[in-house]
Length: 444
Image 1 (cartoon, rainbow, N blue to C red):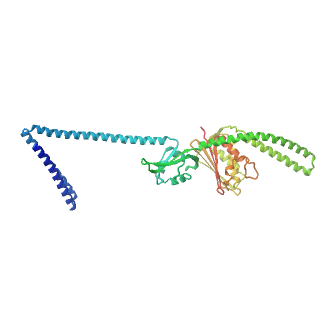
Image 2 (image 1 turned 60 degrees about the vertical axis):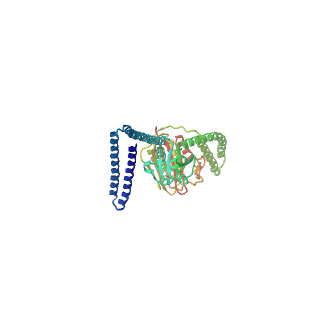
Image 3 (image 1 turned 60 degrees about the horizontal axis):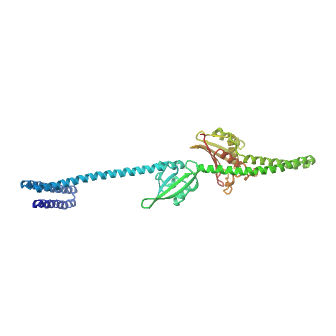
């Protein structure tokens, strides 16, 4: 027992001595500018101390054996074996911890990949922005809807990539839920977005940015326009049928009296009788156009090449206007299944309005392209434009700002486009010209 106690105390003494010498020697040598030598000296002293301790322990074991201290030797062996078992258990625990760490990393990677798959698969667009208004992520739906490429916009300033009204929503950090906005994309499309914004927070409930979620409502808006127009036409048809019947009865009587009067009056009064007859004829024409407008369109669809249709219609309309220039820009051939006669009538009305908006001459730009499953046509003039207070009324029947006309031109254009499953929108400003945007479904 005394030998074991002595061994223990000598071991502790040598360890303390080695560490003390190394601790004192290393700083001293570092102060003299020989840091590497100090490190080597410290390691040598510690190593020497351990060697001396080991030699002493072995010597004590031999002494114990020579003196027949088998019982004490077994105790020393038990301590050594216990120490080795403890080291083995620690190594096993280390392996378990390493396995748990690898499992946790794999689980985190799996959750991250799963979340990315969710964002990639949802039909709504999702854009995340940090507190400095830099774009941090954008899913595939957002790329498709907004016409951008994630590789080109990640880490860019939101305001440098997107336009109004999206930039105002983000800069003002307004939280909105399902608000509808019109938006012109970077690739030239005019779309409707249903937008929701919210704060992006971390696990500590701290704001780290904004989430911008939106849905493309363009198709829904088109369906709403079609339903609204059909409802309006149905009401107009019911009303016009009754009114036209009563008016034509009275007009027939007036026309009959005018003929009788024309046979009895002298030559000087004949122009007055002729004027009455002419006005009756004009009224009958208006009633016929009203009835035709209210009647549902019966389409005779065929393969229509929009490129050649637009070019030929433009040539026909501006044939007598030398001061007006027309350019048709189409990157590729675009064809639709449509009623060619009705489409020609719609384009001719739009081009005629553009020409009349530029009495002193100007230019008309026609752009044609296709995006996904739609053909897009833009007809833009550089005339005086349409005042803001009347732009919402231009598609209403009987509404016109012309001295000659009954206000059926644009109403008929809208009816033709909507009956083909398309949409038509207008943007204009006083002195800024006018642009009509038409979207038609492509061939299946």
